[in-house]
Amino acid sequence: MKLRLKSASKISGFNSRRKRDKLTYVLKARWTMPCKTVYEKEGTGVWIVCTGDVTAADVLQVKEALYKPEQLGKLCYQIWDFTSADKINLTSDDLQACAVLDGHAFKSNCRQVRALVGSKEVFHGLDRLFTIYTEVWSANRIRTFETISDARAWIDSVTAP
Picture 1 (cartoon, rainbow, N blue to C red):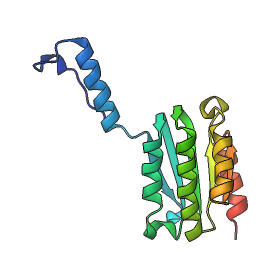
Picture 2 (picture 1 turned 90 degrees about the vertical axis):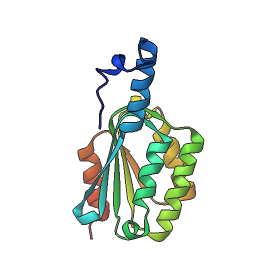
Picture 3 (picture 1 turned 45 degrees about the vertical axis):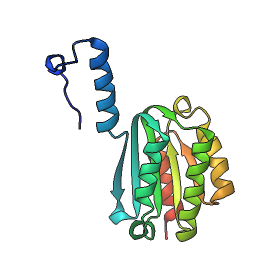
Picture 4 (picture 1 turned 135 degrees about the vertical axis):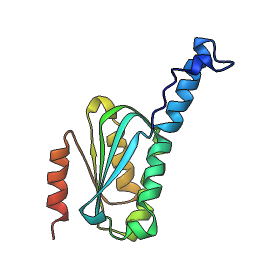
């Protein structure tokens, strides 16, 4: 949901540009979701599309929703699509926390695979670091791709019965 602030200058106390810009920033941060979740194949797969600046809070919010007991048992794959992301703001500690969370989910459902999709410019090596953490803490299958079609082809090959 995006809010228009055309009339913000008419609101008492918002006469200066700085205050309007600050209000715009707060509203954008509050009302736009950088990661949108699309369930596929009757809930056995999920495609997470991330746009703009992605934070650890955004990623963890999606993971918490995915790893609810009623969803976790049937989930076979995740595609994390960062092709429209401007920047990924995660630290190595954030990546480690995500990998540990994935590890707990993997213990409940060892069929899961994950694909990360995005450019090297967006990932800045975070994909490699996350892959290492994933190998250590969750032991599930994860790969990085530059296109969605390559990721889907891989997922089809490893999840085929």
